[in-house]
Image (cartoon, rainbow, N blue to C red; front, side, top):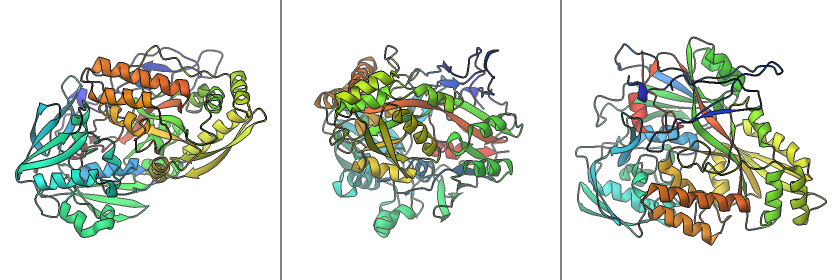
Length: 554
């Protein structure tokens, strides 16, 4: 296996640090894939040294990929839907992108740079800034036996653009005006406005193509009866408990996938997930499903490989800006000043880093001059007084995500209480996160935003901060930010586009529209003998069909 495309980063050098420090080592590809490794390192002679994780080395593989076998993956919560038009759940992507294909796919080249390659489209053309021509592959069939063609592609895009669909991808495809087919294998996508990022939305994360016949057959129940052109078919499910996928024997790439199938088990209890790994019932889990101490234990276990790399997610606080109390900028700033972010880094045994905003340190688009958010309880009290809450205030906070969020909110509540801000928490599942943010159904909300590669950066900025953004939900309405995001969308020069994003981030931080706490690295525990993972730029193990296809076990 090519080491640059393998699961493991080269061993990184380290120096001794105390538990209150974090070593951040950047490993960014020229195309901008987030590839930083965040490693918590040992202590000095005055503090107890903590056990630490380190990056592994690419294992040498002398055998070639073989067909057969299956793997089991632990996930923290159930899939919300398999309908690619509307699903906003994180875990659903693991399955959907093995069930479906998109026009293009993200790949890493021999230099570890992110590039776009043909997928359902055998080629594409960009004749001008307002049109994109897709030339579709011949003889591709959906898993129900119907043909994939230009009509099927147009049906997907038309559904996304239809307001009645309420598609999560409408924000990403905002620039799309219409789709016209010149024949069964050629579609032209016409844009309303120039969008330099639009081509990146043609991957299987945004444009996963379902069978129009199946969508029509199942209607509102389609989300539980998915049909795509992907490498795997949904074989069976026990909603909320497990989901099983099997290899499609008629898949249009007959040499792949290698696995006969895989299974996702819903295990919300971290101790149970660790026990399942050790017992051989599960082959793979991420840090969201495991406690840090268990991960440290697995690194000492010769039956497992542990990877620490990249940026998995940014922990943040959404504040609804358009109604009280969140429409008070002094209150928002008071909350930010009251947060001791280093305590959260310590809570994760140093396996976290203070976040400066939506473009974290050591990402391709970072602003090196952007300062860390300031922890200053006295300033927090001054801002609280300026907000009119000198005697304190109680704020409602929806905590959305995995079970670990509850303990995070408890720490946050303890910090805010020191300046007179009482937190009234409401806990919800990860599956409820999309609806909560899209509907603006919160005063404040606490959770994580999953980061991927910078091809999704414009997607994230438009979804979260633009006044029309799906996950903005009417919270932030700043004409200057809208203008900057729109300019970035049309700006082909990456340097200029980065500078526009920096301006947006500065406005976000100055107005405390949204508060960022820490970032967490990608940590993966994989049973030895399983190969084909390629997660250098993508936080999801099966985040694209190509990854699912190439997985194999000895």
